[in-house]
Length: 122
Image (cartoon, rainbow, N blue to C red; front, top):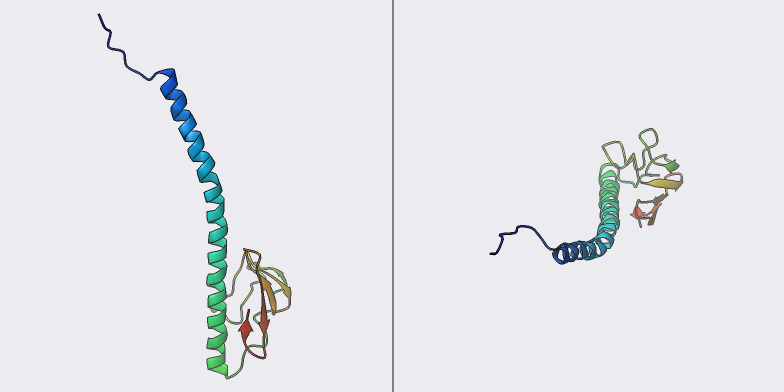
């Protein structure tokens, strides 16, 4: 007589564990790349907003701003970057400024230089 057994064999359980391990090995590096991609995309969004703010400032004042703000060092609520050209009070985190109002470093590590004579933020 055959008994009606329910459950998984040891081989089936081991195969499931192996497959989950392979999926984890493939997925974890993709997750880290997503974080880098997100930082890069956020940085590009801020750069676009700053450039737009520079041109808006120029349209209102017929001159480019002398600087993008007085921040030097890490940007924070007390020391916001881009306060001159971003209406919301500037960027408050993940950016830093090495030279007063002209050289900025974004969260992805790219440096941008503002040239007041031409309004370029590259």
